[in-house]
Length: 101
Image (cartoon, rainbow, N blue to C red; front, top):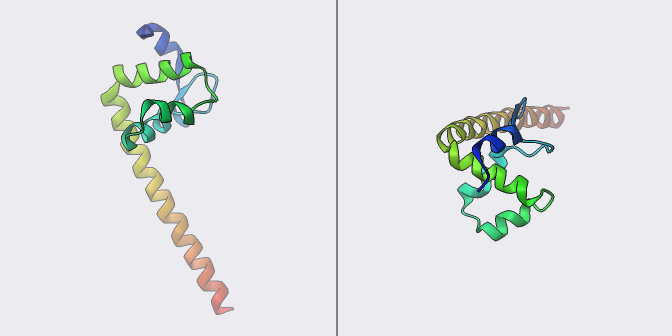
């Protein structure tokens, strides 16, 4: 396992949330696979673009800070759903306007 001090320097908070250093991959993307119950092998396959060290770093951070990451993940899911609903409504209104024209 990677030491906590190394994990903390390899995970950064960006405008996108908790992000793996050197990537645009957020820990919330990891949480999608964890919550979906993917096997470790399948899960790892989906993140083949990162090194084993980066993968282990993300998993270690989630393990050590599970409550914090889970809370933020739930917020991210809620915001994504609200955004989806907003844009779905915008598209519906746009389609209705086109039909009337």
